[in-house]
Length: 93
Image (cartoon, rainbow, N blue to C red; front, side, top):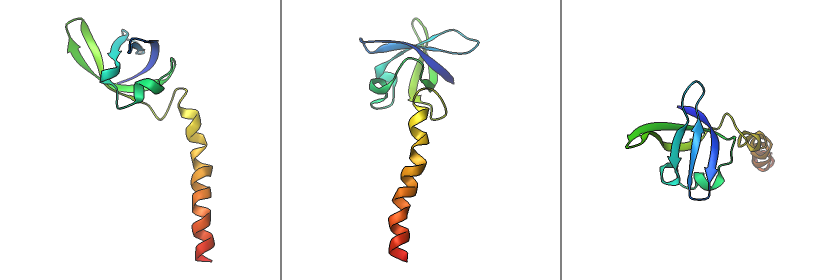
């Protein structure tokens, strides 16, 4: 599934807003390694759901490369890759 981080709490939990559905609870333990510490409200994430005593919860939470506030740094990746290729081209010449 895909959603947008709606709320984050310093106690290491948050809620993901899903278009056309109910918000989904998640805890930092359900995020890929280190992802919770980099999340911001408004980031787009992908996740799976699992049943819990209080209803569905998000598991395997990860940043979505195609959206949210995290998408902007990827635009800088292409020039960096080109710069890395340039020394190889010089060596071949």
